[in-house]
Structures are given as structure tokens and as C-alpha cells.
Length: 237
Image: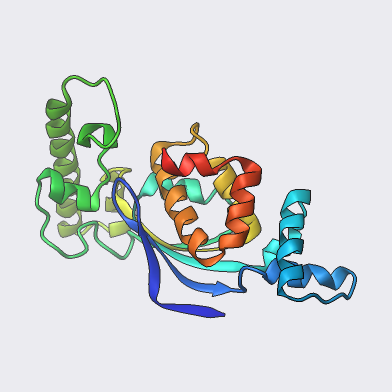
């Protein structure tokens, strides 16, 4: 097990970051464990060739022996829910039953202040091209809506309502934090689905950040995988 101290961090466009904290195995682990089928051994060069062959043939079960533990911070709750659809992974999310949306800090109801705790659509922040004409007006209305929801949440809690009940008035774009433990085979499936232009913008930006980290720690695997699936071009869109 490799523990990264400090963790390997990549920022997510639109807000938040992802860190790789721990990794089981290395770039050539899938090739080494694949040799158990024939009780064979190979040097580093032979394992590099075998690794590429495994990807070419779509023989991905050895990649399940390669495991990564990420910490993801600042993604909107609905993106966290989409991650749960990748069922082979093991998530552990921040609980709004026990924590407050403001993390105990005073909230500044400005664009910058709100965007720290609630995801604002990138189209309204100029991070993504759009044909929306009244952006400033809509942005003001969204911030006012968020403020009302947070103020009501506080009022409900201060009145004695349980946090787990009061949180029903919080916006779905509230930013959350989670641990995400997942093997390389499942990550390949995740990247294939979530780097695709048809995926939601926020999820694609998270997938790009994941790919950037993986290119740093398993470069041979990622180079061959991205080439085979034709995904490299999506990292730069």
C-alpha cells in the first residue's frame, strides 16, 4: 500500500478538488498478477508488454487488484449521487445529519461566498459557453433562493427540529465531501462513461481530474487505455 503524504491533488473546474490518498499496487501490478494463470514470471519489460496486451484484449479482471482511495471535496450533492451508480466503488459521504451546510463558518451571500458551499451552474459564471442573455439577473435570483433555503434551515434547527429533517429544505447543489475507494477496472468503466461528451458537465470535469491523477501514478496503463478507447481528446475539451 502506498500512502501519499501529501495527497496528490487536482482541482475540479467549477469548484472542489480530488485527492489520491492511498493506492494498492503500482502500474505493473495487473501484469504481475495476471501471470498467476500460467504460473509464469517476467521482468519489467515483459510485464510492460503484457500490460498493454491485457488492455488490447480487453482482459480487465487483473486490474481489479489495483485499488485507489480518493477524497473528493466540494462537488454538488447530485454529482455525489451519480457516483453511487458506479456500484463496484465504495463511497463514504459527509452526513448532513451531523454537519451544517456552512461548516460552522459565516456565509457571505456573494457569488464567491455562495459558490464555496453551493455549486452555481458554470453557464452563469462564464465557465461554459451558453446563449443565456439575462445571466446576472438569474444569478441574483439563484443566490436569493439559496439564502432563503439556508435561512429556513437555520430557523428550523434553532426551533428544535432535527438536522436530518431540516435538511430537506437545503438545495441539491450543496457541496459535499466523500471518500471513494475503487479499483482500476471500475475506474476504466467510470472514465469511459463520464469523459463522454454526453455526460453531465460537472461529472465530466470530475472525470478529467480523476484521469489527470491516474496519468501521474499509472502512466503506462492510462496511456494505453486512453488510446484504445479514444478518450485522450476529451481531456482537453
